[in-house]
Image (cartoon, rainbow, N blue to C red; front, side, top):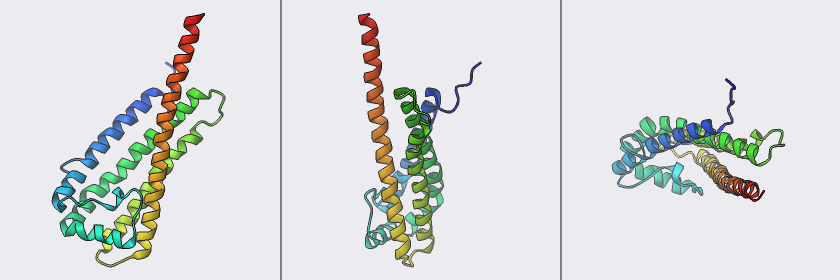
Length: 188
């Protein structure tokens, strides 16, 4: 039996399911954001400030979480937020690579485009490290760490948006390509 390798539709689907599962866990109850927002009266976390935040806004968010919310974040959300970036990073990496392979058969290293998805994962992990430091040192202000966390949040968001845009436009291009090939075959 011939091995398909890492970059095949089956693996893209498997990692998509893994991504959906971790997304459900990190956003739902009893361990995710839904439970945290219940504890905090509707307040969320720094990770969700996708366009960035100032030092004052960061400490406002941490203050609003309260002691119970900060503890919940550290105990439940942080561990899940190690796996979650891995799930979407691998999904983006495999899917982007697969799309490039299908659209441009002669590209030598299609996986290079896939690194965009892995960059999102990397910056999410870096952001998480900074937030972990902030949570563990609260209420001490660490303005420099907040600024670094903010940059990581913004860069993470940029790579997520680029990955999702490339996947969506790539799937549309593949649909058009498939339709054009089918139409050409039907006219012969």
